[in-house]
Image (cartoon, rainbow, N blue to C red):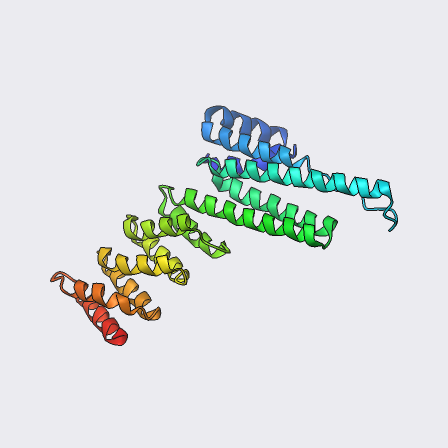
Length: 270
């Protein structure tokens, strides 16, 4: 059987909910599959880190005596330390190429649980808002790390999935933008490049993205990509693209359909 079948059993093993037959089947597979062993070990580490996050007991009354204040302080410190440890482990987890497929879904569940934990138990306040803001920033960083790792996947469908995750990012840093532009110009699969072009068009508020798209006009050889990038330049009303588009028209081997499309785009931009 494929590894995907056994990955579905990982959570059951962590929760001790597998039947004897399932556990024996999984253990036999793990003996022969280093990749699954590595992934399960990473998931086990994250699972163990979650154990340090304990839900604090709600106060019996509203009186904030010394003991209640002291317990509250200890709980906040425990949450702070636990969250730091959790995110450190999640970052390490996503830096392992063999671990991300199941780990991504698993980690998001943990993050969602942890966010809910903070909101429900910690309530409102300046310090709590600061913690949640930091949490949101780290979640975004984790998603970026995951996306960058997935762009290196040999499977075109997985690279397309990686590009699509840009819609989940609240912000895209320079590393993400550079990776997307590299994918746009160099990925061997035209469907990956088309998906990347669409993603970059949505990030066109970044000056470096616009500059990269303009430079990419002269680097595209696929008629499909040439036509699509002309469409994007028209949509963005990017007049600086006129020059590379005119240069494209000088190619005697340019597809006639693309030539017509590019000509229309130039006339609309001038």
